[in-house]
Length: 393
Ligand code: RFL
Ligand code: PHB
Image (tube, rainbow, N blue to C red; front, side, top):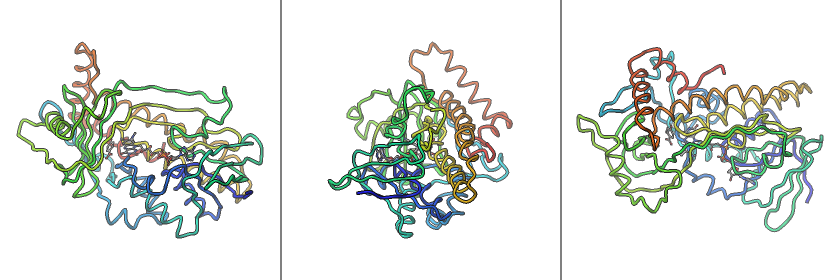
């Protein structure tokens, strides 16, 4: 079957769905193709921290109702090491800016609902998506749905299909420059049905490795521990995870970690990855399809939101005024922020994780860094402004 749309979007993660929504607000038609089921994308447990700028954009584009009601605004985070906690007062250090705890699941559910209420087209469970003619003025997406082959003619294609997607791979060899760094650790993450043992996020540095206490709601906790990147999840029964978390987060004054039923657990690798440019002909890459940051800075989703905001504006300029300058600038504009965020995420990762084989040199540098960030207002302000999201990069 042959069909047409203005913008063909591959992937119904946060980037693809938000782009489709922003384009709709500008009167631009799009079709989203997603390999997985609606249930799968709505239940995938991932990000939890939204920057101020992400929240502002969602609220200003009609996606703020549930976020304002159920999201939790946070004004600080804790760095915990040597048995003591040190608060970084995010809002005091950044003229009142803050972060919000609102799960990626919820963002995705809100986006899917909003698109479907406005008669938006999202095809879930499509197979064999492939891109053709992206270096011409008539690119197309072919795919199979319920056993039928389809061809979708587009003005533009956007690759919002994450790190493992097909869009980036369809760009001829030699066009993209790839930067890839794999960190020598992964994160074992759990979602647990237990009230958080803390009001603010705790990033804990410990001889046995990094640990993080985050949350999703007053009843649901999200916690992580650093593990080897090739660790087998079967080595980690729930009791062992809770025990390890308690040890790594212990304080001298006897702080207690509440435990509860584990609802979900998994291990994620930590990597930094960027392709340059984020465009080839009429194909534009956004979000994890173009870049990955280690989760220690809580930035991947926020970066994806920034990309598609820029892309929606550039596409709007093309459709409204016939101007292709913003599209030409898209990649360079995004990459400025991508590299700022890579640097911040790398800084947080190198400061907080244990590196095997360290003879003590790295550990001493890490302690010096942690103490500096906690004692110097200038250093704390730098961490805070990056964590809440720099408004103008
Ligand atoms: P996604 O979410 O990977 O969505 C891509 C979608 O494309 C689909 N797809 C295809 N569809 C059709 N055909 C194909 N051939 C396809 N191939 C793939 C996939 O099924 C999927 O639905 O990318 P997107 O939209 O760019 O969004 C990026 C974010 O998901 C990601 O950056 C964040 O989750 C990163 N992240 C965090 N970001 C934050 O801003 N704050 C956080 O607190 C935060 N915590 C995290 C995180 C990522 C983590 N992991 C799992 C690495 C915590 C963790 C543990
Ligand atoms: C999360 O809540 O999933 C989360 C929080 C902070 C991070 C990464 C993930 O740095």
